[in-house]
Length: 340
Image 1 (tube, rainbow, N blue to C red):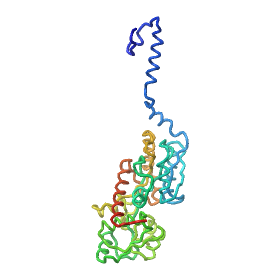
Image 2 (cartoon, rainbow, N blue to C red; image 1 turned 90 degrees about the vertical axis):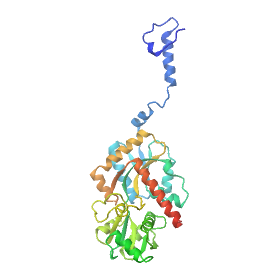
Image 3 (cartoon, rainbow, N blue to C red; image 1 turned 135 degrees about the horizontal axis):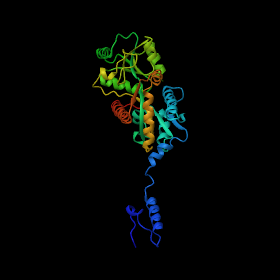
């Protein structure tokens, strides 16, 4: 019996024993043996999205995180030509929403608009059912502008002045923060540690109460991301922002990395994650669209109204900053013995 070979399949004369049928059978067999995943990424990329994509926000509607997610969802609808729906799953200091997305199918139809403390702070304070290794980074759109802010009549004009005053009066200056384990608390603890100063800690129920205390002169300084309007109107003084770039339109608030270059004070990037295992073509398409949004002046301006300077972070840079924050906050939590 003659052996069939693809190189000669079109030139061989059929035999009485059904050469063409044997050729067809061989082709069918070869096709059956071909792995089904060949070409699948392209198909997945072309087919997605065929239904609405939900962006889970692990915080209540109406807050800053929710506002950022809705702003981004609006742009993704236009850029990807699909329906993006924001779904709020608040509770347990973001853990409920984070756990939900971590356990969702990795099909590109469930995304997380992540709040950094849920990954950098919370896992050091309580057991959670998720971690960075359960997510794919899609990209970040900005960095929460947490700032070192002082009461109006404190005799300081620069961050160096505040540090010098605290060192001259150890244990005298008061540091207000919104609840144990909050971003304002932990960022403030890192600042105090890196600056080498001693202060009196004054906890409040929330961010609004903390800002109100500073406005009333009841605390000397706070670390907060909700005081920008008061700084602009001269009711509080902003000395430094926990970001890597100058705050747009606020040259008097320099990046803390320029003032304390040796300090390990991480930023707080806001961005999008997907469940681990989400197909790469889908991730790449989302990443490209989000990056495009961050180049648009209208998007950047609207994001700034939420006190978030628009700074694009690639998936690798996004993960790097979150890991940096997780390690830095973990160290200070262990050192200070902080518990919820």
